[in-house]
Image (tube, rainbow, N blue to C red; front, side, top):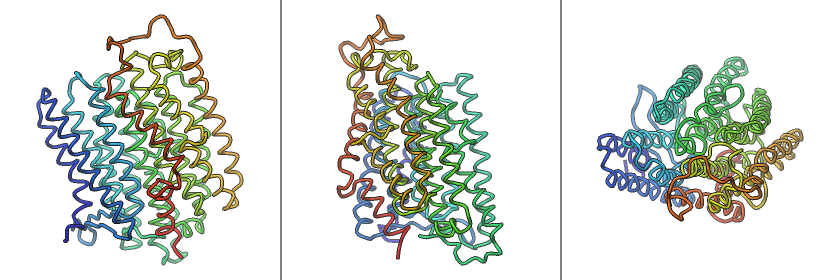
Length: 499
């Protein structure tokens, strides 16, 4: 293999090697652990940027290693893979900085950062997988590596949340495995192929294909938090704030949504899936999830649970866009994979700042907090307005393309779903923003830490400010080269809607 063939493997291997080293470090090796984390982050990000430039000019990076008799472990950096791996590597750096500040002085940091890096390994592996078998292996590694992060605090509540998470995700993994094996018996291949690899099968296989699709989507729908497979996600909010940010913006739920994209476009092919009558039921399920998540968020006083149900709703925009299966709707769904990540990680960073600095965990405790933490709450405001879809934020771009795509595909009912969801988003975010900026602050915060005149520690403040700026920039400069929207349009042209 030439040098280019090793780069996808190297991207995955850096965080894997980093996790093994960090596991072996003593708890007091703070400086060394920090340096290793940051070195791994920057090295991975540099390789990803290099791949972006080369892939933009038509190059494809691929690592292929023998795994089973007729199946290889395939890591391929195509434009779709880079969309997800770029999000993962970029937000990994910011989440690492945030976690270093958030966990300062707490126990078991080597264990935390070891599993944190292992989780990133699994996520980048999911993104770069070139066939369904490779995807399945990394998908299950992600399941196992996220569990210790969810139960990190070691409380009874944390272990209950971890048990719920494992019960859902391991069952989902079993369904995904069953669908994968069944599919291989029909096709003799699992290689991701633009416009799908099952188009040559006869209509006699219709029952098998529909059953396989249901198994694959159910298995992936657990992590994507599709109703009724979503209950583990709000429960998992007992995890530390960096883990919540990772689960919602980068890793677990995005792996499920990304897998659904792969199944529709690179396994079945959008046209074949539509002919089999599979895309409309999936779009309806996504629409139900969007409204349900928004309604549940409306009645949550706990801030992280409100954000969790918001994620249940928002991630299904991705599924809705690709299930509509038209070019413009697909662009809207795929770009929301990035846009939602930027906005949601901002909100969870800010929620962590409130909890860590002032002991605020509930929306009802946020009165006047904008005067105490103006930068944090400005970032929170940007994230919230983006979720509603207010221009010029990134969220507006996603919803605009989803709406246009629905009209293009003759699915006008989607407009009603988008409008209803946006109104519900406003109903659960705007009252919180009113509390933050227009209510009088209390005489004392629930648990304020003595940090002098600072708003909060710089490691906690920098990441949400950066991601908030990115969320606005992605909207303002949506048509700029290498913007998320432009890259998604490149994906649609090269992979999904080839002539």
